[in-house]
Length: 125
Image (cartoon, rainbow, N blue to C red):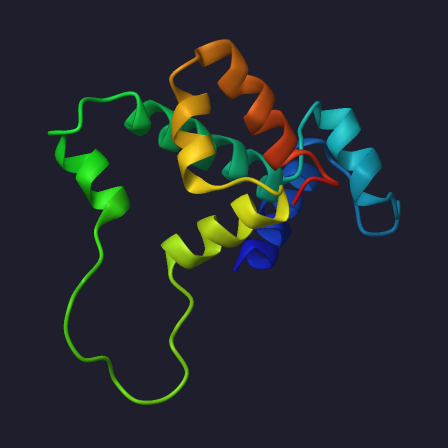
């Protein structure tokens, strides 16, 4: 899905900057001309910014409870679908951190920005 979003963004940037298909410039050069970052990186940064914002809310907040919600009951048969939560936990595990470490880091805004930079850097995820 992120690939399709990136293709759309690149197409729009090429139209805005009047770059024709015959000009053949690389996407990295396109982003540099437009002073943009890749769409996937921007989406990740906003996602983790929202998570930090939510984790700083009181425990009684509905959005904070939704982050820890674990539905009970029987699942459908077959391979479980990728969920937002599983994807997020995989990103945390790739950084060698746990969810409790992320919760503690989110309480300090300056420290949280450093964590988000690590999670959202091109080599970080």
